[in-house]
Image (cartoon, rainbow, N blue to C red; front, side):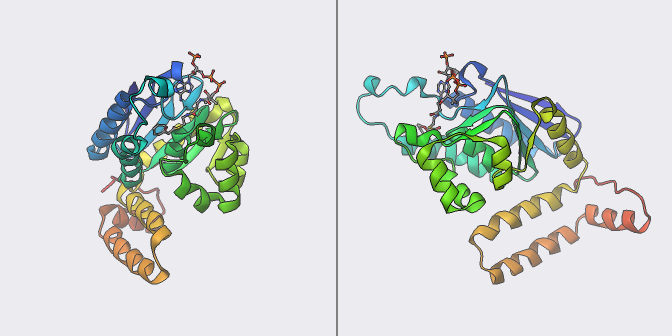
Amino acid sequence: TIGVEKRAGYAVVTLNRPDKLNAFNAEMHRELRAALDELGADDDCRAILLTGAGRGFCAGQDLGDRDPSKMDGPPDLGTTLENFYNPLVRRIRAMNKPVVCAVNGVAAGAGANIALACDIVLAAESAKFIQAFARLGLVPDAGGTWQLPRMIGEARAKALALTAEPLPAAKAAEWGLIWKSVADDALMAEATSLVESFAKGPTIGYALTKQAIQAAASNSLDEHLDLERDLQREAGRTPDYAEGVAAFLEKRPAKFTGR
Ligand code: LHQ
């Protein structure tokens, strides 16, 4: 249900249940988490590209095995979140290298919010983001109600969540929900070139930068200035920093090693 292709310095992870628009079942969750754990620990992998097979990116939870008439009583969706979606969001956010998401087609429900958990999101012009939860009587999960108001403000967040209206990629980019909307046939080339550049970049500096930006949501300025001091201290001790300065002074491109 997941494809993992290791290339020079990065890996492409593909959600691969195209007949179901790559909706999540337990198996896909387990495989995706195992893949991310392995890639997180692999120093040869310095960036990750997440995308979907076929015409969709991800339609969220697979509703096929969720028929209430076939259940004994009301389901405990909290357990599904606790066991599967929440660890996935935490894993992506804590990943020690950039995670780029190429949204190749519709991203609905938890599928949309998993995309938003990634560090940089590019989407095909034809892709749409749908907070589909309201159609089911549910709350946007996988971090949706945390991310949306921060990224696009409460007015747009509430409207998207309560109406479940599809948001086209271009508008998502205009609103600042994603980085870029790209012509469909250029999406993979552009996303690949971005992860290729990350694969040759200062990996520790990237990881610390990601950590700092994410911590900003809950820090005061005072706390945050202290955090930046600590993270910069760490960045300044890396060989990549020494190389970056040397390259600048010698007027040549830096050769980062990710250390
Ligand atoms: C699907 C799905 C799908 C199964 C398309 N499941 N088969 C967390 C905790 C626990 C439980 C509940 O949920 C959550 C979080 C969530 O993610 S809730 C939100 C779940 N997702 C949705 O509500 C989206 C449902 N899908 C749709 O609304 C449409 O499929 C979209 C708008 C994504 C795409 O529409 P179309 O392009 O018209 O495609 P389609 O509807 O024809 O779908 C293609 C096939 O994929 C179709 O199967 P079929 O056998 O008829 O060809 C769909 O049944 C299947 N599919 N989403 N989530």
